[in-house]
Length: 313
Figure (cartoon, rainbow, N blue to C red):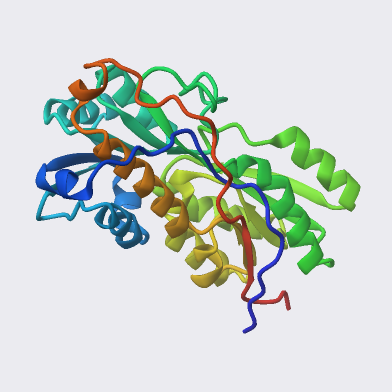
């Protein structure tokens, strides 16, 4: 199958600059990172090699002068997991998705928190990208802003698909008005389906088949991505092509994807964490509770990719 890359788009922005000191001094001091993420996401963190590679480039090597405390939540309450992680006293905590970030925010106002989220501002995690304040910073990928674009690309690839399923996480409000407007402009019908657990996915996709869905736009969701293999298996068993947020979704059997590469975003997170470690222990820059960052948003990283893997028969 052929692959194409096209369109560059602002897809990720960081809210922190890094601060440089002598690498020999950095490497001499041990550092500790805490990671909190959905257990399934943590297990499928393919970009972790690049993530750790960015830290190693700054002189921080896991097992040598860097300890990484990985915590995956699932059945365990988020607040309990966050409190336990804070009690371990890492130098900085990296969290994936806002719910985990809120829990860590409640647990500490002094340990720097780096978050990977769709939008740090609208989620309420920071006051602004240029002046975040507090102890939270992170990488915003603006994934929901591309939900409509993915619908347009799916229609472009499959012009005969007139009934499109929209698969969303049950606890997240989809960009429904924008999707409805786009569907009208494209002359297609969209049908919303939601799922809140792994157990519901099979029934939801079977219902799509019953309703004669031609193709599926899987909306940006950390939860849905954590079970993307299960979703893809069920969709493909019903011969329903799909479009995904991350290019890996196309590589794993989806029709196509539109968004930045997950490993690239995680490398960017690694650079931010490296910046925190370069500043040293919390007390070195104004003591506990001092803002973790105060810089402008730097230029965006490379943007979305489109990958095509199959055609509608």
